[in-house]
Image (cartoon, rainbow, N blue to C red; front, side):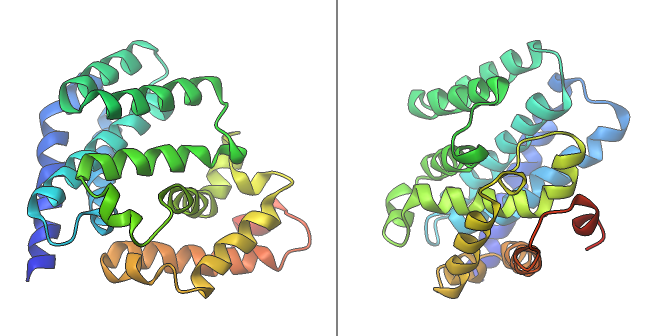
Length: 233
């Protein structure tokens, strides 16, 4: 019952803030539904990072999901620099100085294309922000090395987005000489049971992680990486 209520609170928060601020990004007609769906899906996934049964933490998770989807809008969809400034001003009103500086660091690294670990640093910084915003840093740190968890979450994204990232010439850890190392680390994370808590606390996260693990295993069997092979998976 509490888990279902947490989910509703997180989704409501994401939808509320997305509706409230969507117009400031000057979205095109076809982008509105995509923006709302992304906010909701992130809220459902991020729920697993909330603090226990705290409804307030779930509310903050929804807001973090909105900020994350808006981050993608200004870094991937909107090419005009002014939207990054609009986003940073919005973030500054919503978060404390520690989180704001992390978001600003992400924007700067994204603009310069210099995230470390073949782009996986993006996930590390992102999870720090989410946990700080949800007030769950200490809670999650009892179970995980938070930076390593963020690293794993970014590998998840890279596995699922490999085709699109290659097509659009975006950074992806699987399109580097270290791809086999990252795939091995990812598969071992599951083999060691470290993903169990994440899957148990969010059905959407369970689906995402299960899908990415299957794909990771398929990719790991390829002696060489071929975009056409992955595209047909």
